[in-house]
Length: 205
Ligand SMILES: N[C@@H](CCC(=O)N[C@@H](CS)C(=O)NCC(=O)O)C(=O)O
Image (cartoon, rainbow, N blue to C red; front, top):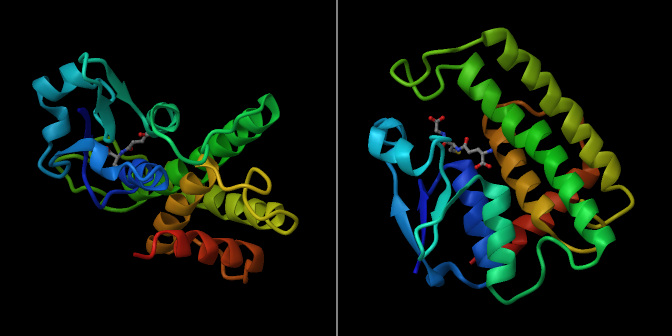
């Protein structure tokens, strides 16, 4: 069985869990819990498995290790049945990839940078190389990105067009993280609000 190393309530692992949920495949992988705050990712054994020292990462049955959400979700999309998350035509695949990169860099990573550099983050034992000004700069990037996403969603249902995709999962997780960290601008972003409610409804059990 495929193993997914993760920490259930952390944002990036959640991206992979939502992709598996879209494919109705949550029970077709084995989750291996990792103690992020206890420093488990930085032990020699874990570094040997995944030099990125982040979760999620996936281990295939032949031992191959794939880390980072986007390649893991690309694998999941092809490996399991269900609606495509990464597109089928050249145009769809390129649009989804572009929007996924934009939302990953501008929202998930930017909000995480704020958390790690401009707050206490994971605590003094793990946050040993903080650059607070970088965190503050990334806070501004989050605001720019959500305004851009709002404009994009004024004319289409989802971030890459009319169909739900991996880019929507990335943005949804990034928006939740940015909200929890108090990074959203004050104005009402009505299109983003409508889109967020429709994505949230997919995950209500
Ligand atoms: N871009 C990476 C980000 C992964 C990431 O930053 N994961 C966080 C959990 S949400 C982590 O493992 N943090 C450990 C640490 O900062 O030491 C991906 O796509 O997987």
